[in-house]
Amino acid sequence: MNKLVNFLRGSVDLEVEGAFPERFLNLCGQRGILFWGVDWPGGQVLHITVTRADARRAEGLGEKARCKVKRLAPRGVPSILDRFRRRYAFVAGLAISLTAVSVLSRYILVIDVSGNESVPTAVILSELWRSGLRPGMYGPSVDERKIANEALLNLPELSWMAINLNGTRAQVEVREGIKAPKLVDKTQLGDITARASGIITRIEAESGQAMVQDGDTVLEGEVVIAGNIYLAPPEYSGYEGKWQQVRAQGRVYARTWRTLTAEIPLETDVKVYSGAEEQRFFLCFFDRRLNIYTNSGISFEKYDKIQETWSLSHGEEWQIPISFGRETVRDYTVTSAAIDTEAARAMLEERLGTQLLQELGEDGTVTSTTCTAAETDGILSVTLVAECHEEIGVFSAWEGQPDGNAQSNTEGNGSIDGTDD
Image 1 (cartoon, rainbow, N blue to C red):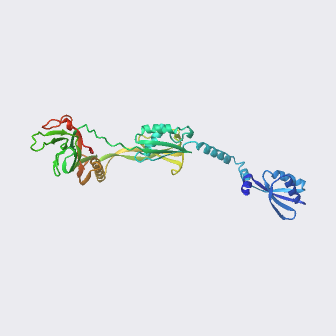
Image 2: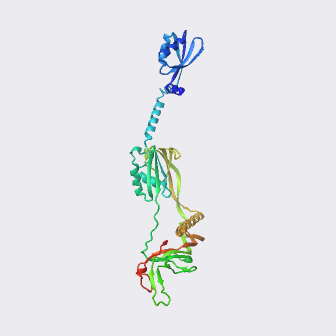
Image 3: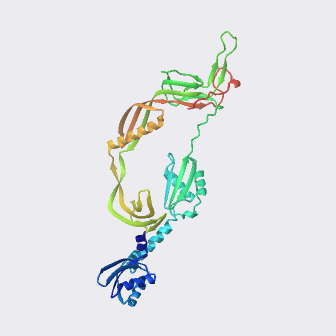
């Protein structure tokens, strides 16, 4: 501990030479001058170490003790700082660095978002930007609760948000809301119809009367589960049968065949770069951009603009909102060129396959596919024929009274709980 204290306050090694160097030590003790490290190398020479503050007083005692006092080597932090006394650039840089650290530490430099799964982080950051939270803001002036409430109003997918400021980092924690189940309006009556033609493979009638069986062929729009049910009377009762109207519910699976077509021209416009380009540089400080060029106009009629940015960051843990950027403007002309037929065909087949999966939905599967291509008047057409297995039932509400030979029985109106598809 004593070595650390002496290093921080500084010390000086002295060489004392005279007839009675021990008298010099007595005078130092009488005057309260702290010294240590006494060494007698031999003869009438004495080496001691005193504090930096007592060095001048110790040198003044040399005449009274009839000794010659010589400084050997300063030590400690004060002597190290003395070396940079005349290096003004270093002193100025150190002052600027300390000022920057003390000032920037009170500004928000990084915003972290956690807890989101389906809502993209970019969407949350954009809404926080509009609400008043962004890099470069003065931390003590940020109202975390107000900003979180405003952001939640514009992000209905989120149910909770909290903003915590930790130095230069703003930690945003969110919780996504649970989607409410789809409510079925049981007072709205109707049938389940086929949204596509096909061969029935399985029918699950939860409410209503199944109108088809496995293996039957149905056409698009045909009723497969009827909401108008005939209630037969007991045998030999003498009563007449009645009709009951319900909301038809259930699932209907079928083999279907779909045909999709896509087209693309065999010639297209392509860019031909002339080789001429212009470069412009800029600086970004927080969310402000400083252009390092005078002429903001671009001399090219058609051009591509490529922007590169280098920031003073190291991953996500250490970031400074200061970056240097370069914009490269490349001149080009447009000319017509033939496309690769095989590549165009492969692209169209891929797009048709994606479209087919979107139309089938999560429950649908593709059994087999066949693609054909044809070229007509400079147009490449690709046709996809697919055999699928999918759920084709869709609810169709009645506009008026259902078709039937009996009248509606209002006492029988209702619906059975189930999944409406």
